[in-house]
Length: 180
Image (tube, rainbow, N blue to C red; front, side, top):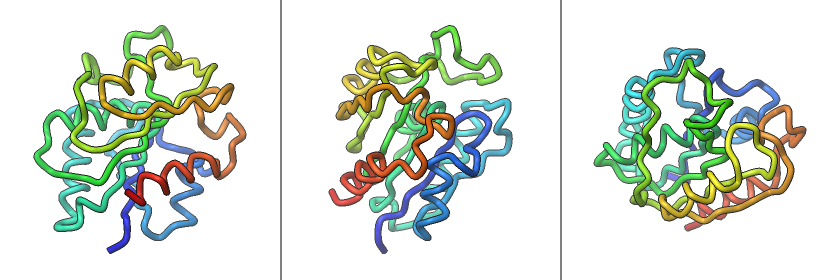
């Protein structure tokens, strides 16, 4: 089995023009983890769905790379602190600050979130002008999780509104993680 990517969108899911959706459509080994409620996320529910998705990869979970955006990053941290399963790594893009002024109030149970080393390699990607999480916050996350920080400059929340299209720079980071 080649590397399997599990796509983890944030609140509201990722639109058809979001880089996560573009990657999923272009790669048969990419699978979106479908949450029951995208608009009112409950951390415990989202963690259970992710656990089931990784478990369904069976003996191949060590070839799984999680591709998380926004709230999906906090989901990965919460899941990693609870699971016994192993994965290959995680690409964590635009982690939102749950204590920041723009964090969605409809998202429950995501904070406090674990600030401890993940048991797998990670790359944390941030933007200089993300309204949901500062570079300083992403730096704190990367340091706590034991991940590498990549600042891509001014790119907003690194979503469809950022105008990145298929975001080739991000896909290169995924390939780096998949090639480990």
